[in-house]
Length: 224
Image (cartoon, rainbow, N blue to C red; front, side, top):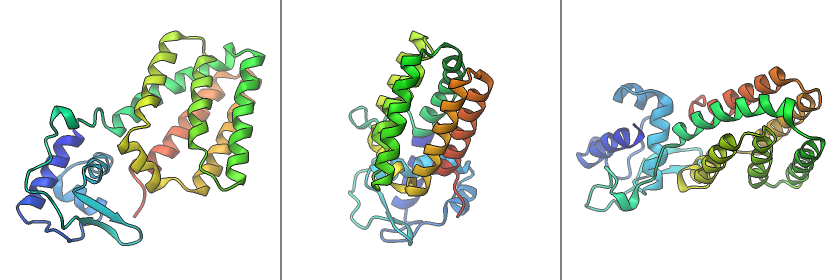
């Protein structure tokens, strides 16, 4: 879906509706103009920016690049395929990791909980130093899914986190992650550790669902 929307926007650019150097309408307005959901539009804009067709100027909006090549970029050729979109990956992670958190609350060993706490401690130290704790998120979430003791969950979540290291995710993280989001992540994980210690599967699932809801709004449907 995101590639189809990106192709439509590129078509508008190529035909001159949005000229080189022109500022694009805001996401909400553009989504209504094209007739798509805002999360799907944002995913398409990330793909367009990754492909070098548009650029974001901090505090000034999104602009069509003036130095576009002559050949259309979308639809992407096999060699340039960006793979499943960020929204698809996010939806899959949400389904798997919420279930895994519930299982981990009842199945995690003391050693596994200690490893999770050590990861959270490292994240906390990074945030105190003003560093993005994103690299440690991979450690925490794969350790959590391993604590669910379900090999299929572990394999699938690892593959999704591998995909999360791609160009589209890198660009999206740079747009939305900041010290405020880092601190909110620490609060969530500290609460999750309490649910694991209490072996409260329902609470662990609820916390993970709330986390994904909050992060999903930040990534895919922020206010303008």
